[in-house]
Amino acid sequence: MNRPQQGFTLVEILVAVSISSILLVTIYGVFTTMSNARIRVETAGEGYHQARVIFDRIGREIRSSYVDPSAQETRMQGGIDDRGTPFLALATTAGTPRHGVTSGVVLVRYELRQAVGETAEKPSLFRSETPVLAEDESPIVYRLASGIEALQMRFLDNGEWREEWPPDTSSSPPQAVEISLSLVIDETAVPFRSTFEVPDVGPN
Image 1 (cartoon, rainbow, N blue to C red):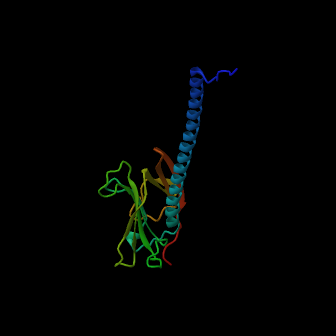
Image 2 (cartoon, rainbow, N blue to C red):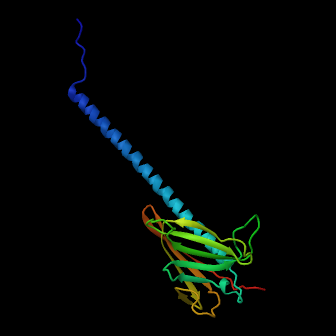
């Protein structure tokens, strides 16, 4: 006598589908969380790397700064200019090589501002470089970093920190420069700060 074939009941099928759906949603949630965490780590890493590049560049130029007492333009300046723009300007021997050779002493200026024609929420850090001796060379201006919320400099003067430099027309270079910036990483402003000693050097 043949026994009737038994299949799954509707309730059993619904239970199995429900359990499978819960497992799939759980697995998807785990993978989504891991993917978002990986993206956040990569974004943070890129931000910290960008800050390190900025500080390495500025620090190298400050440590190689040069002042000629007879040339007013070689004196270090910094703070907030007449346009309300944070800036740092100095003469340095650590310039960008041009045509395969270094340009000698160059005038470098960093400033935090909006790019011409742009209406981005956050300003960008721009760097310009002009050779002191090569008058026929045009300045190099480029965006060094974007997404910077704030930039501030402080200058050490005989144990006292000043917000702007120079404090007077006959001032020598500061003993150190402190650079503070807030870099937007994953929609969060992350502060960075570093201090660079200024060499007491000039023309021989």
